[in-house]
Image (cartoon, rainbow, N blue to C red; front, side, top):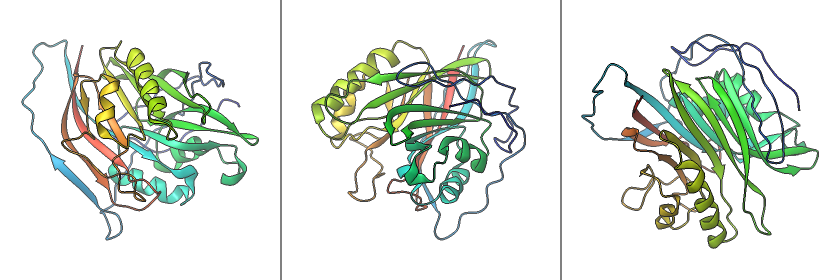
Length: 292
């Protein structure tokens, strides 16, 4: 694969900077970013594209001038390799307008999706200046895995293979993203569906990596058919959890997609988009972030 740098509209209020882009596969470091300027405008929702939310309150405030306190919209969406169309996916994303979104079941250069570089094309269509792709497996002449789209610069990106046994290979994408001068560690993944113990092993691996950072976010399709299992991630907060779950997998009415947070974040609102763009629903959360 090769570097792509071009201009596009997107990410209201953010000023993207130029970035060098590198690619690698099979567990090596890989970074991919786009540059551009402009603004996303979100149209009013139609009867076919509505967003439902639950509102929470918070009273946390910064205590010193050196502490950053800002709001972010985070999201995750399993795109089913774009089978319902990238334009439809981009519309669903723009309606919610997340600052950072994780994407699962993403193709790059695969025959079934017209040999499209889906992260690059969705970044262009939805208006994101930065993106990164995390390869999980080869698929024909192309690659298949997860991706991140970001309004903020992706300073570094690495691909970490996860234990996958005899099942389909899985990976963990790890982005270093600077928000208002504070470095966030944003992870994206799609865990195995074949075997519960394999998923638990993958969660334990992710926990060892993720919880070593002060400010972290995990976005992904965890295939957690039993929501009690997410406790193996050892995280501070889960948007989808046993006491409050959002159905995200349409075909089986399951809450298998999640946004996982360190205690640097406080949830303000969360919900799912009802726009049909995949066999999954887009899960989102607006969060307050406090960091030094």
